[in-house]
Image (cartoon, rainbow, N blue to C red; front, side, top):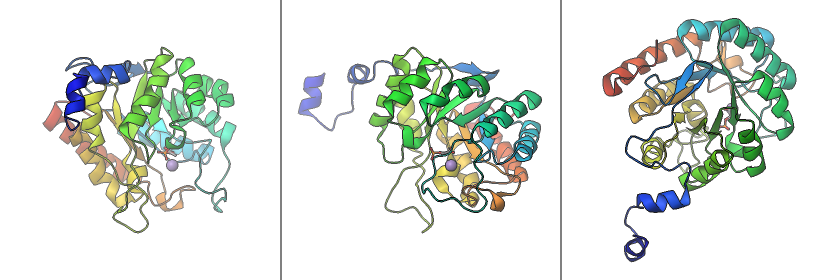
Length: 299
Ligand code: PEP
Ligand code: MN
């Protein structure tokens, strides 16, 4: 087969070639899919989990207010960063360092509202704190190829969501995923969150949502694929259409930034939706999931 590929370089990669490059994340047969549960929430199954919440765990009251609202509307996992990778080292006047206390607030809200938590881990030294308090380790786009961090996170056997770097190919993303599976950790999902492109549709937009990555990844790998339309569009009015399109494209989960007072968010205030907007997006996603895939978003 590789002879054929050499003769016809435009030919599709064969499944044999795939397995030799990505032995652990390659799909081995048509219906080969990874499914796993995190605190009762199934990934890769017939419900499409929604991971939502603010960019930053800004305060205890924001975390609790958000968790209460998310639980009530049927969100499956709460997201919020405490250790943030910020593009510039300068802080806006609304920005508060949350760090360890942010993780503690998330844990308390998780227990009170029975809502699992995903939060981004930036450094290996924070693993003990995260392992105790967080349900899913998020490895952010900027650390996608931080191989020592990938291996250290994988070894904890905690569920992991690996975000694609905005300049990385699917080959790079799957290579990074191999590092995690190689440690024997099978609770891994991948996240498409937008790529850099010359034309991002608004002068202030930063990324272009690569929805084509969803069917492409589902052809290549058995891992669940999550889409984050908030970081991709950077523009709240575009989150709903792109969240709906993510479900239509076959996403196994959707991550959406939501904040009680979006324009006052301490980080990226242009991208979160408010709670009534999120509730309406969930209902529409549920309709699409039922109509196209006989899956659901809401219980
Ligand atoms: C985030 O989800 O808060 C985040 C920083 O995402 P990304 O790594 O995709 O920029
Ligand atoms: Mn962010």
